[in-house]
Length: 118
Image 1 (cartoon, one colour):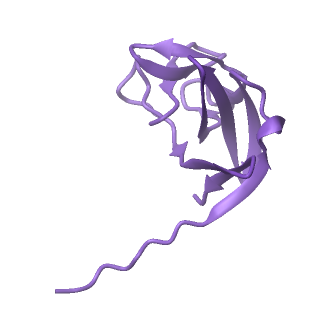
Image 2 (tube, helix red, strand yellow):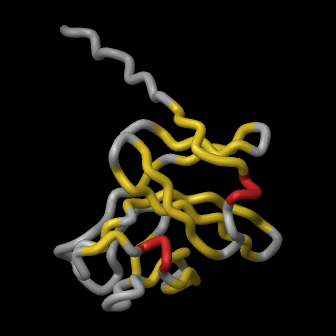
């Protein structure tokens, strides 16, 4: 039986928590890819999310400009182009099964936002 290699996650410091606009998105460039970061404050709780900024339906890097909210019990961003809703935690599209976006693991340490390597 072969031992599995341990996966080591590299964390990239991308910004301070104050650089993010609450309940809105900003775009960061990491390893040549645009990532939309969101700082969502709902019911007294702040959560951070990272997803690909690429809208697969509209074929443009625009998701950081989308409207955030809740739909079907999920925190989502609505594409500003064709209004598909993407779940920020998973990247799943709620309207279509044939598209989705990459989601990224986020952590906050000492008010710094860290994104897991791609």
